[in-house]
Length: 312
Image (cartoon, rainbow, N blue to C red; front, top):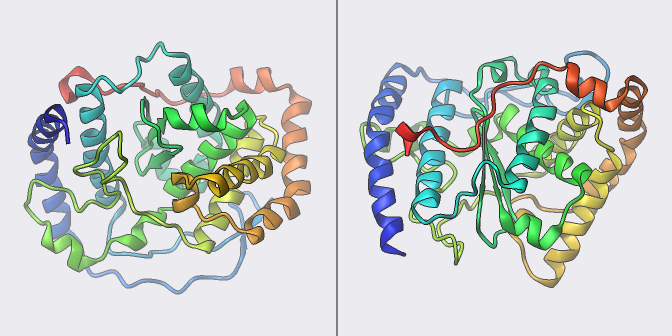
C-alpha cells in the first residue's frame, strides 16, 4: 500500500470519529428487530408494475445507521482517491456524464423509498482499472474509470447500470449483511463495521474492495426497479439486456468486478427480456412527452461531484 494511502486512511478515520460517535448512539438506541418473512410478489407503489417483495426489515440496521456507515466508508474511499490524485475533477466529461444521469434518474426513484428524497446525493469518478460502480445508501455514487475504458457504455446502458445500483440502495439490500453481533463489536470504535469493505484497499491491485455478492432475489429487484426508473427518465430499457450481456462477455475473457458482485445468469437475462414490453410502454410514454422536456421540467436533487473541503 502506498504511503499516501495509509496517511489518507488515518486522516479519514480521524474525521470519521465524530460520525462513529453518532453511530454508537444509534446502536445504543437500537431495539431488537426480527427479520420479516418475504412477502409475495407485489405491485409497485403506483400499482403499475409487478415487482419483487415489498420493503422488509432484513437485518439489525436502521435506515440512519446504514446511511451513516455508508457515509463513513465513502469518505474513506474518496479521501484516499483525493490523496492519490485519483478522484477526477468535477469538470471531467466522465464525471459530468455520470452526474447528469444521476440527476435524470433520482426524481423517479423516490417512490421506491420516500426517505431517499432526503438523501444528500454525491457523485465521484475514481481512476482505477476496476470495471465497477456503486450507489451506497444515502445516495453516495462512485464509478471507476475501468467501466468507461473496458465497457465503453452508451448513455442508455450507463443509465441502466446506475439505475440498477440506485435500486440496491433504495431497497436496502445491504441490510442483510449486518447483524447485531457485528454492530456490537464495533460500538465506539474508530472503524465502521465495513459493510462495503472500503478499508485498506488498493486502487491498483483491487485488494481490499468489497466482497459483496447480491443474491438472485436482490438482483431481480434491482434489475426491475433500476430499469423502470431509467425508462421513466427516457432511457431505452432494451439497453438493460445488452448491458449485462456485454459485461458477461467481458467477464468470460477476464473476470470483472461487476460480474462478481452481480452474478449474471440466463434467468436474469430472460427476466429482463420478459419484462421489456412493460418497460417499453413506460419508455414510450416518456418519449411521447419528449425526453428533453421531461428532463428539463423535473426537480432534481443537488448532486455534488467531490466532497466539501471540510470533509477532505
